[in-house]
Image (cartoon, rainbow, N blue to C red; front, side, top):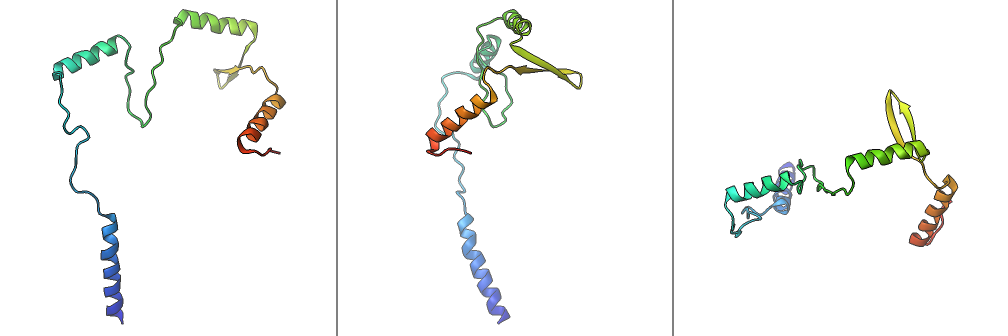
Length: 129
């Protein structure tokens, strides 16, 4: 009886192993690609793009880096920030010696809640409590 159980277990194991079989031949994603530029030309183009700020230097973390070009100079942004401080439209607080910037909202908590409930109703056809 014990030998029979071992043989059955071995047969089941062998049969299930085929379910995990994978393709053994590796096909490169760029197979068949024919370059029109030399390596030196590609490196020169890459360095030129970095120099012009057209590319973001990045480390791949699984998410694509999105590079957006700003239309304002740094001085303009700093001036705008200082004006918001003076007008009180940008609230700040300090915690552990570092300034935290909090944007002052224009809606009350109840207005935001009602807006979220209306969006929930429109999306799912039900209302929250």
